Image (cartoon, rainbow, N blue to C red):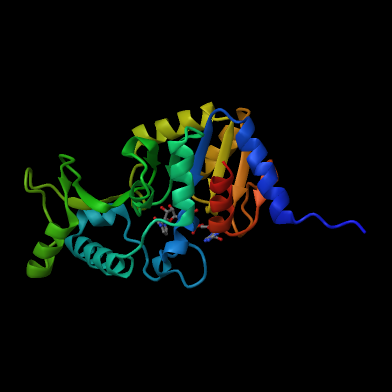
Length: 256
Ligand code: NAD
């Protein structure tokens, strides 16, 4: 009697073979890699990120009331996910980078969990910024959230820069705000130089980030997507693992 091959084992074997044949693997993560830590993704049902209409960048700049509301929301969300720690997926990617198998990770996430898992800042390319600190929009000075929060809760007023008086904003990219050009260039270079492009936990609908897997593939890389739901790029991929990130990546890391 023949035994049906286990699809999970078949996928793991294919991914291990691709990694074994790769010399320049790039990682690309979305909100799905962090859900195991309790940080919800953006588009899954019940997402708290969808509860309020986003405050566009232009409104944040021109309207102090919008800035107050943005900071109120920011601190409310931070309280919900204050205890989030890197997942098995983050740990696996960190070990791939540390072992020289992956060059770096491009991320759409703003939760700082790749760095918390041990990646250096130059091993993470953050396309949408980082929500663990703030910056002055005029002079770029970094401001710490704990200081801002103390002052905000005492005065109710949105923060201004201690150096230049400019508007201070969480260091994330809002709707309508320009993408960080140097990061975008670095992500494009990494994608084009990769021979294996590993997408983890992204719906692949937010552009320009979601164009990178296709560009890598068109430039000769193998494309692998690990996501529990279908994505628009599944048809281009060499391998789609439609499952949970934690078990897949921890298994991969343990076999290498
Ligand atoms: P998304 O919410 O659009 O897509 C996440 C995908 O991950 C979904 O298709 C979902 O089915 C899948 N997924 C979730 N948990 C999974 C798991 N454990 N295993 C397998 N698949 C899983 O996220 P996106 O594509 O990153 O785009 C959303 C935007 O929102 C990004 O710009 C990002 O900056 C922002 N965002 C970031 C965070 C964060 O930093 N953690 C959280 C929410 C939103």
